[in-house]
Image 1: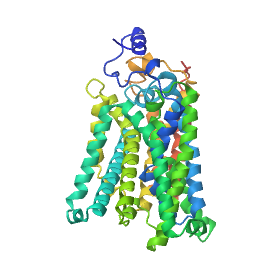
Image 2: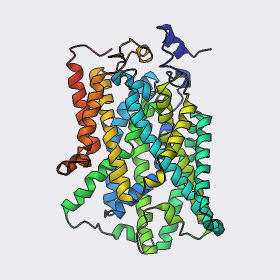
Image 3: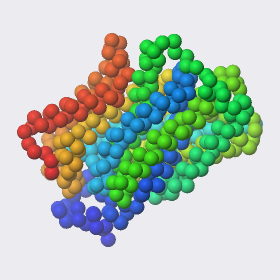
Length: 475
């Protein structure tokens, strides 16, 4: 028997089977069960992960002192929280996922373009997280059973074993994700604090963390590193800022998702980033140089008890972040390409395969390529998408959508053969301005602000082009 929302949707007229399946359908009220704790713990669990740690430790390795690094991360997360909450609103109000919401701005067929861009970035993150998890398992095995170091294939066995574990969780569905987040969130904070306490004792306390000066010789030198770093902080969660409706569609109300996210994201990122800063600084005392890669650092701890704790922590944190942040969205995005044959589960398998094909072991060579290359680079693709989406929902349509027309051809979001050319041109313009600095050295400062300039250009151009139609678009 169809649920009430689906029945009501179809009662307004038949939906197009090429635009509709059970995974893309609006979530009915009785299934919207996520509350403040679920969203707060979601962000705690997604934030307490190795990439967050490496984000903070990379800033230390790049020359910042502890308060500059933590402050940069806090500011970046407060900034990205704004588009996060704005895009979350439609998910809660209408119960729809990201690839359906984006149809209102890009058209029922044009929505595949931003969805695929978002999905490819998520696939890259999935591969990176899976590689980190596999490396962690291999590193721990070398500590617990040193004989495995003689077998180079161990790394690949661990990598694909962790890959299979991720696929199993996503195959179980969204409720398994919610269960994992609720259990793992408090555990991860406790384990992180435990590891901080352990290494601080080994290094003789937290004195080195608070006394170490920044390495910049002038304010100009600092800002040359700070600006792209701040953009990288925003870029870190610019992926979820787009697909947050995939989660807020399950919220009991707007207050639950807004309060849960506001409490969870900035606090969790700041706290765990400080742990990364402190542990990296302590590693400089213990080993003579800061080690920004925690897997490499843990490999130096030849104590089985510590290694076992670190193994459990890394696996749970990486699994939670990977499934919640890097599989849910692309699964829906790939399903949106052909809902009749690609389900949420099939989309998850596609994500896993592409994540391997992108060769994550080559995407993380050092902290410079991680922050100013990977994070800033893809933020120039995703910032413009966020600009178009937010401008369409809040400025052009005044938060009012025709739910039925999101699932049919020849409706309000058909535009020209299912594609809104104005949105595509706005997206292209934002990406061009954001990334032009990569090939024109004199405009390199635009690349340093990639997410910000891409967002501003695309949003402005979109509003101007849509208003030039001379039509009332709010529905």
